[in-house]
Length: 345
Ligand code: KG4
Ligand code: ZN
Image 1 (cartoon, rainbow, N blue to C red):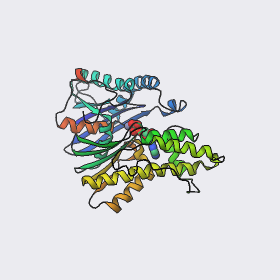
Image 2 (cartoon, rainbow, N blue to C red):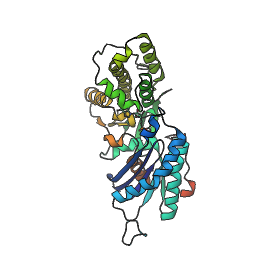
Image 3 (spheres, rainbow, N blue to C red):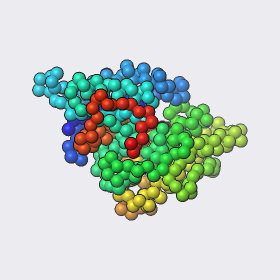
Image 4 (cartoon, helix red, strand yellow):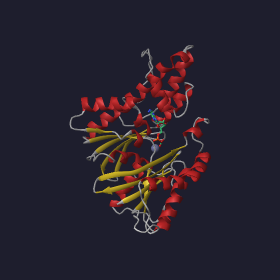
């Protein structure tokens, strides 16, 4: 099966062509046009600007994905190949951004006469783990992005139970806000991580919110406020930015790793998977890797390649492929963007 994947839920315009056979996935192209440089000066994503950029970029990006995958479209090219389905992110995300991808997918599905597959963005992040691996169920997924922080139990393809989620800020959002407080740029996650590597004194102390709350929920808004209070007390904080970045990163990683291990033990999972933009964080990756090795027997950790952690269309195409295998298509007339789409809907 050849799938075209389209993703425009936030500030990345992305398209992928993927070949799937059984459980084997081959990504033939993965094109991402990032708008980070444009939104940087505003300190975050401006929805209207993002939508306008998506409109400009979407067709060139889709074309590039087809060209890189060497797909000459039948029936337009004699002897060309056929796309078997178009997978598109319908939510959650910024509604104005989502609409561009959804309307493009609708148009192409109608014009090419191929079925469409509606994909949840979080499900896409989960399926980034299926690109180079064949995870076993039950599996536990820690999804950590700019908009979400969730622990999800996956008992089979498309079968999810949300065990816990953030009550306020998402982990990525916390990194972004902490970076803003420290006068660093956007997006904050990679900058905080780079600063943390330069830390000299590791003696600061920030709270580990909800570490022992007895459930699988998270809360990161208080951590950001705690950081604000600490720097307000410290006249020399500007000279100690790496130390603050280090402690902040440690606090976030400690809570995420501890709760993930507790959930993995409780539900006796076979695989633990990491997904979302914050999965690119090296400290989180290595702490989770160590904890899985030390505390869990028989469970294996899977982490997507860097390029599949942050928003991309390959993950959407993979999630779409497994839905298409189950014949879970959506007629193009019924494709609808939903900014608040739930994973279990
Ligand atoms: O999944 P993603 O690309 O977009 C959303 O769906 O939100 O995640 C973006 C988030 C941003 O908050 C960014 O700061 C964070 O992922 N991020 C990181 C790292 N790289 C990206 N956070 C921590 N460490 C990183 N290396
Ligand atoms: Zn995302």
